Amino acid sequence: MGYRSLKKYLGETNLERKCRWLFGICLFGLIFFAFFLVDWIGEDLVKRNIHRNGREWVRDFLYDAHWEAWETDPTKKPVRATLSRLLLPQKFEARVIALDRSLVDAMNQEGLNFREGENQQPRQRLWAPDDPEEAKLLESLKSDFEKALAPKPALTSPSDAPLPPDDPLAETSGGFEVSDEDEPFKAHPDPESGRYYFYQPVSWQHNFCKSCHEGSYGKFAMSASESFAPQEADLPFLVVRVALPYSDARAAINWTRAVLLAVGILTVFMSMVALWMVVKYVVIKPLSHLRSVSEAVTRGDLQQRADIHTNDEFEDLAASFNKMLRHLTDAQSELKEANYDLDAKVDQLAQLNMRLHEMNRLKGEFLANMSHELRTPLNSIIGFSEVLAGIDSLTDKQKRYAQNIQKSGRSLLEMINDILDLAKLEAGKMDVRLSEFRIDSILSAHCDMVRSLTEDKNIDLVLDIENDLPALYQDQAKLQQILTNLLSNAIKFTPEGGRITVGAKGDSRGFIEMYVSDTGVGIADADKEIIFEKFRQGTAVLGRDNLTREYSGTGLGLSIVKELCKLLGGEVSVESELGRGSTFRVTIPWMRADQPQAAAKLQSRLDDLTKPRRLDFQRGDEPDTTSSSQPAAAGS
Ligand code: ADP
Image (cartoon, rainbow, N blue to C red; front, side, top):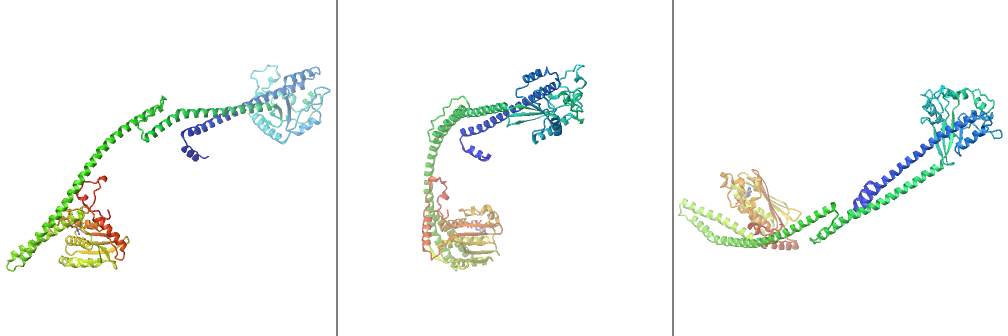
């Protein structure tokens, strides 16, 4: 299991299992580390002990061998043999090994082997390595030995106590260096025989040894009462090998291991059980209690409280939890009260809205009636002023006055018509009369109608209608009214020598786009929103005193356009740059005459649009007299 999957697993499991896993893994690691450490230390101790024993055994062997060699008195020989048997370990097995096989052969051939007594078989004194492995090991020991001896002229005495002057060893500083820890050795266990072989080189470094051994192996011969005098002068490299019993130590090591392992496993098991109990009763139990309380609270039982008395952090947590619950209940009751207040206010607001709506309706009705009532006398005034202007007996001045009455009357009528239209639109009383007509002919007829005006101002009027536009199924009169308003604005706000383009094109969404574009004074960015509101006019143009009169108006034309577009299921937008001109785009759905189903759909939609807008009090509409009385647009 990789780190990621372990993390994922632990991330998805509960707290108890997480603790168990993490603690278990750490505990296992620690226990096994401790196990291997103790095992390693134990094994090292055993080895050191074996090596120390090996050195002592080698020394004992050499003492015994020398005593045996020097003891020529036949009466004392049995005493030595008995002492050797008593003092040396029972399974004591030691031999001297020479790397030089010719030396071994020579010794054996010449019969220089030791014999305990006259009746006993001679004991081999010098051995060759048992096998190539052993020979290799001894070669390496030889090189270690030479290296260890090289810097020292003579090995130091094992005991620091000065030797007495008559001691034969006194003339040298050497001796058998078997107890020196620096003295090289080799050792290895032999699992087959259950023994541990310990090899240590024989040191020849002092004169005392040389007096017997140097230059001749005859000294061996002498001690064996034989006459052999080899010609070789150098001292050979000899190694004492002792075989120590090892199987008991091995068994003890294995036993220790088994005990250690068992203790380790038991410790892990006990710790896991202890941890499980701690986690379950100290951590999980209070947590579960807190969870059940919070679930009860979630279900709506706000009277539930955490009941933990453990005198620890969980008790603190439970106290904070209870405090939070109290706050929650308080906040909830406050919220309830606020809600009641809010409900009451919403009721008041709804009533206010209804009153406003009613007042707005009354205002619309009043405006419509008033406009209607105003139009009748105004028409008479215009008619009579026309008659008056036609009387030949009037002076020029009187004729001009009569024309002024006529002009003012017309613009007043226009304004009243606008107010009437807007009032009708807002009151939802404007009817939509669908008919089939061609947009290109409507546009060109309109252009022809205003051409004289454009020519007066030397304005270039251009038509840009897409070819093969299908017939429209819409309210022709409303569309004409939209066009009239846009065109009259364009002519009004375009200075002499300018250009006005009137165009139409279809789009793939089933809409037709008409636009009136001019190279007039343009509209400031800040004015682009307000110009569609009732009685609002662009401030940038009106700000210039000399232009105010020229561009004066009611501020109703574009709001009527906007409302009419909504009524026809479309919208109007403007793009303009101050001083460069403006483009007004009207997008309305068209219905081809050959699509009766779609036409019916449009009709029902338009019917919907012409219904008075119902106030939705629950959605908290603002008590705005202007917006609340607007008819619903198809797009809104
Ligand atoms: P009115 O023209 O009677 O002032 P409108 O509602 O028709 O009222 O227009 C509102 C305002 O929009 C105008 O006062 C003018 O500032 C701006 N406006 C409308 N059409 C144009 C146009 N073609 N070029 C520049 N400004 C325009």
